[in-house]
Length: 331
Ligand SMILES: NC(=O)c1ccc[n+]([C@@H]2O[C@H](COP(=O)([O-])OP(=O)(O)OC[C@H]3O[C@@H](n4cnc5c(N)ncnc54)[C@H](OP(=O)(O)O)[C@@H]3O)[C@@H](O)[C@H]2O)c1
Image (tube, rainbow, N blue to C red; front, side):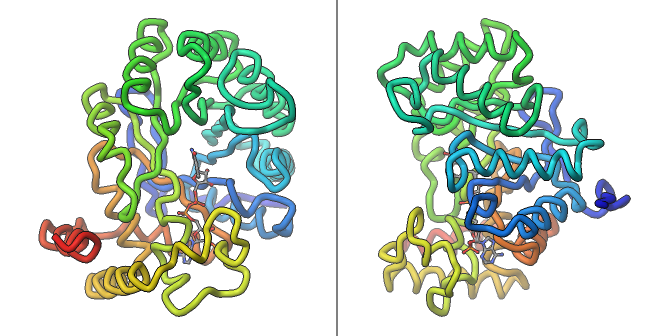
């Protein structure tokens, strides 16, 4: 029987307020996109999840289609939750999402009222939950009227199936409409989720981060380690069993000789700081004032523990930040 560590809230996890809400999120959250599907042994998923909770990670990020097979991550999470964590439900902040491809036919994806409500009902059933803490619209739907999507999100909160609403990967103009609509309908947007890491700065370039700062909305970064590129995983070749060998979401063609050489230089800088590349990369994201949390993935408890050390990183100096940009962009 699992008994959580009694030091889970005193062993170094830090919690940040999410925008101007009442919610505190751990600065490091755990995502279940990978490592909770049919390809991963149940015990390994369980070990990662429970180890995370033992370290004060209270936020777990899911989506309807995480697997493989789609839905399996929610099912496995639900099983671990009910077998090990049932007594701790109120210590957990659980998110799920809808809008990407989930089932066949015209209602199995995108952001109609029909899809979002049916998908959330399915997610709750798979996880064995009455409600999720946070429900996201996973992507912007250019065809469905924004008011339909946004009113559905409001209604989902009003009927108690989710406590808060988040938006993931929306372009700036749609984000602005969403922020206003949700605020005016008494369901303020809790958080925006997008990819931000040393290699990929889309929400900075696209203006979303600045907009969130202006409106005091939380921000959470996904794929903060660029799916493993910003770790030592690929510095000496492509190891068997890595995400790149699986090849579905991280292709070996990404790892060009130029990128490898830049990663090696970043790694050298991290070592000068007495850190791993993963640790420095996560610290870089957390240093942005708008960042509430980073959602890491981990295929082992060792990776999880290594990544949590970012909480003890010294701030990157302006000279170090410039060196990172110089390594990547030559400026
Ligand atoms: N909103 C969206 O559209 C969206 C999109 C993508 C992800 N997400 C969310 O973000 C979460 C995290 O995404 P991600 O898994 O891509 O995050 P990530 O942290 O960038 O990558 C995780 C992967 O990197 C490798 N890794 C991690 N730490 C390592 C370490 N210390 N040393 C060596 N390798 C290490 C592992 O790959 P190996 O398998 O090779 O060991 C691990 O599975 C997802 O689970 C999901 O919740 C959201």
